[in-house]
Length: 146
Image (cartoon, rainbow, N blue to C red; front, side, top):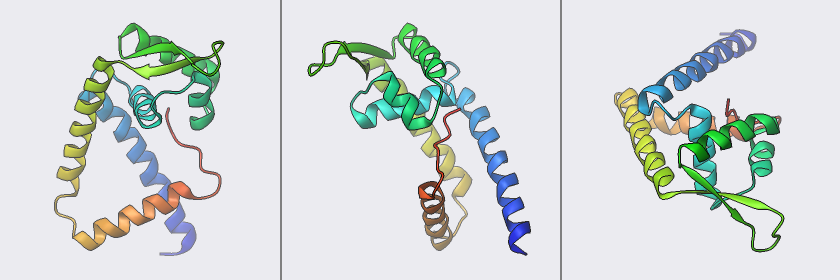
């Protein structure tokens, strides 16, 4: 396979992967979109952050993040708190319900990946993991949260 053909195949397969990921997100938890899941995961990893930090990290428009944050607040999955260092700033945090749902969906996703990859050889899994890390760390990377 020539390089140009390989790039075309990669683009087509990554698009298929993204579509499948969005579709499966609804099955794992109907009220939690892939974007919501991603934002909750970031809040957990960062131990809370501002909405503007989420927008910058995922290269999303502030209005998109604002709508997502409002929906997550209405669902009781996140809450706002005042930043102790700057009382003008509000930090978003997971609620206990948000942590529970995030843990449930994360475990469901892990199970789905394990099932899909169950017949792969360990060496293939290791190479695939390294290639994905390399691809996502490459120049021009903007995390996909839409």
